[in-house]
Each structure stands twice: as C-alpha cells, then as structure tokens.
Amino acid sequence: MTESTLPPGLHADTLAVREAVERSPWGEHSEALYLTSSFVQPDCATAARRFANEEPGYTYSRTANPTVTSFERRLAAMEGTECAVATSTGMSAILLMALTMLKAGDHVVASQSMFGSTIRLLGGEMARFGIETTFVAQTDGAAWQAAIRPNTRLLFAETPTNPLTDLCDIAALAALAHAHGALLAVDNSFASPVLQRPAQLGADLVVYSGTKLLDGQGRVMAGAVCGSTALVDKVMGAFMRSAGLNLAPFNAWVVLKGLETLSLRVKAQSAAALELARWLEAHPKVARVYYPGLPSHAQHELAMRQQGGLGGSVIAFDVVGEGAEQLRANAFHVADSTRVCSITANLGDVKTTITHPASTSHGRLTEAQRQAAGIGQGLIRISVGLEHLDDLKADLSRGLDTLA
Figure 1: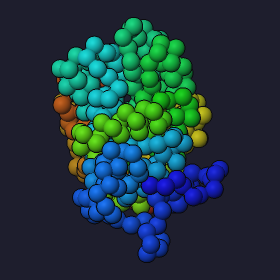
Figure 2: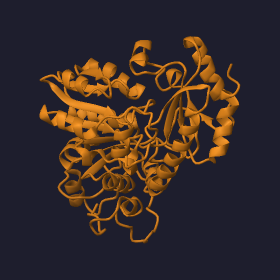
Figure 3: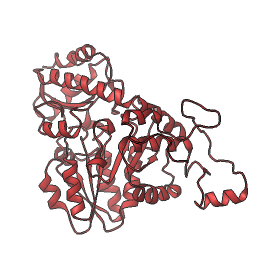
Figure 4: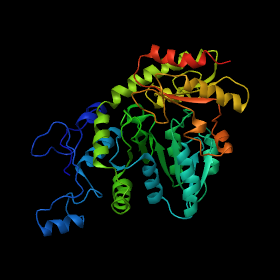
C-alpha cells in the first residue's frame, strides 16, 4: 500500500503496463493474484491499528486487496484522477455513486439515451428512496440547463451513448454543473481513457463498466469509479467497507491484464470500425449509420476534438423496412444470418458482437422510453473486434443482401 515508485510524467501507455502495488518478496514480473479472503497480522496491536484505519495494511478483502488495489491504481493513473474504487460490475459502480453522492430529496439530471439498466436504476429504483431523476436529450444543452433545480446534486452523462453514439460536450456540461453547485459524472465505458479522459475536461466522477473495453475479451464482470480522494476514497471507499460491492481479486487481475493492451486494441478497433461504418453507409439496405467517426454524424466535429480523432469501436445502424414489425424482422434476419459475429449484448470484446438493442439491452424499457432514446425496431448495434474486415463485411452481407 505504498506510494508509486514510478517517475512522474509517464505517458498513459506506460502506466497501463507498469502502475501497480509493489512486488512481493518473490519479485514476480506479472502482478500477483492474491486469492485470499483475509490477511494474517503480525500481532494484535498492529491488527487493531489497521482495523481502525490508523495504519496502512491489508486486513480483509472486502475492505482492500493488493490485486484490486493494483487495478484501481492503474486505472486512476491512466484516467488522470487521484484515485479509483473498483466494484463488482459497472452497474454496481453507478449504484455506489448514487448511494454515496445522493440522499432523499435530491435531484439528478441524466441523459435519456443512457444504457437501459442505468435508466431503470435512476428512474425507478432510486425513486423509491426519494431521489428524483429528470431525463433529457443527450445533445440538447438547453434541455440540461432547463432541467436543473435548486436541489439538483448530480448531472450524469454517458458519452458516447449506448447504442446511438450520441455525445455530450463534457467541458460545457461540467461548467454547467459546477455553476449550479452540482457534480458531473461521466460514464466513459464506450471510449475508455484511450480516447478521452473526462476528469481532464472537468468531470468530477468517471464511471466504468470494466466488463467492456477494459477487460476486452469478455471474460469477467467489473466496474470502477474514478475521481478525487475526497469523493472516491474518503466517501465511496468508506461506504464500500460496509456495503460489500467489491470487485473480486480474480476479476481485478483479469482486467488489470486487459489494461496492458487497451491502447492497442482501442486504436485498432476504432480504425476497423471506421472502415466498416463507411461500408455500411454505402449499402442500399442500410437506412442510416450512427458512428462518431463519420462526417455524417451530427457531432462528428465534437467527437474528433474530444476523442482524440477516433470514433470508437461501436457502430449502430438502421436497416430498411416499413413498420415496426417488418423492421424487427429485418434486423433479426441480418443478425441471425451472421456466422462470424457473436449475437450477444456485451461490447468492447476482441470478438465482434452484434445485437438488437430494442429487444436486449433496452428491452426492459417502455416503448415510450425507447422512442425517446431513438431506439427503433430496425436498429442493430455492432461492437467491432479484431477480425479481418473482409470477413466482417461478408458476414453482414449475408443478411443485408438477402433483405427483401
């Protein structure tokens, strides 16, 4: 639990493979996996001090574990924040944020285009505890401004959104939140710290589903919140010691290893996604493509400025068709005709995935909520992996070319 021994000023790519807790006396090169529920203390007096947080040291893996600490330190270093706290899933990270930053009577303003489970958690579950959420159009700055109330404590955006890849201007939204005494939280799961670092643009909290790009191979569930020591360590960390939303050491080790190749993967997948998006945009059976790297995207200029010139690995597109029933059938036909792509709702994997958002990730929303988020029955989402592009094009052509 000592401070980092790395020299200051290292680039994120270096931190992604080097930042971690100190090596054990055995001198392992790959970070150790500490599969233990508790830690033996040298004597009772030391144990008492450590349990009272008067002295650093590991006591119980629900409060801290060296493998989890390595993941937290590495992600925080890459994100450019003072610290991070790891959680069991991405949704538990959002729950942790809500339970520690909000109380009964508080108000939240959030994007109506967020992940379906996030909308249900904020708009449904948290409402039972007296926390009200107003959902606004992601790209409408005036709507965010108009929704703020005297009791607004948090603005929460996901950028790009799932699945339509809408963006928000993080710096502008941070300025708006701070002008009204509120915090800004940004879900950065789609972009990762490779494309954007929201804290450097003014965000107070950065939320992750480590299940996505951070792991990168669809192996484990994980989540995290990055931010200041005052908010994340002192408040969320203290809550975690009681609540038990912790990330398991094995899962932390897997995602820790995933961070080492994150930059290479994200850049390669973004380049492939851009080419595939261009190909889809030219296909006669595709009505519209949603991808920030395309000039046709409404926020292309913002994406290029805010995401380092890359559009990310996720593409959404509408197939042609008339009426909800036919659109759904056509979307199912395209997805079901694939032999290379995996029909699964996860994303950020090295294997390309394809899904129908209206019946999966956003299937529990009401039709009105889906329509407000722009998610129609003909929409398909693709998370581009590392397969050869010609094979992906042929795989999608199998269904697109046979649409009536």
